[in-house]
Image (cartoon, rainbow, N blue to C red; front, side, top):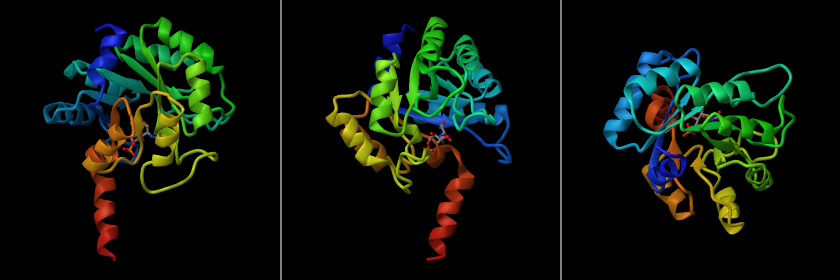
Length: 224
Ligand SMILES: CC(=O)N[C@H](C=O)[C@@H](O)[C@H](O)[C@H](O)COP(=O)(O)O
């Protein structure tokens, strides 16, 4: 699959994020691979997967375009989504068509443009996870192939909210910047609305692949 083909295949479609955090009973690469297969059976056009072991496990069972990332906590930075070029290059070599990395303007271990170049040289597209309009502009200017609204609500510069950041999507569209919608799209109606807001494609995680989180939504609702 050539790079433009990947974006053509994902346009207007659903990508399912299959991740389980440490402590989750689903924290097992074999389980993640099964979640990925279930998403594929359900019609997902692509998958988003965290960590080398999970990427390898999913790559072995699914031909769908893969957005790979790492989550690496470091003492020197708040940036945790694929903070180094080395990690991004390894994800590309494991077969990820797209590598997601933190595209915010926060202090980071390595310059954004250098990371983008390294990942692209390894054969993958770069998806910059951002939280604000200026970050999106900067990431695209630095050579990102895609920007995702992934980090809105998780940085000091973006509003904390329970739902998707519709205002950010509106601003991105208004500025003529292509974007991927990701983050707290918790219903099919939200996903469809994101496309209507101009998203290239939509990434959904928790509402499909985190039963512990979904259970909590129901439990809280019953408390009234
Ligand atoms: C902020 C951050 O670290 N987001 C991560 C990025 O890969 C994942 O934990 C999210 O599940 C993913 O973005 C999908 O979002 P949601 O689970 O809300 O549909």
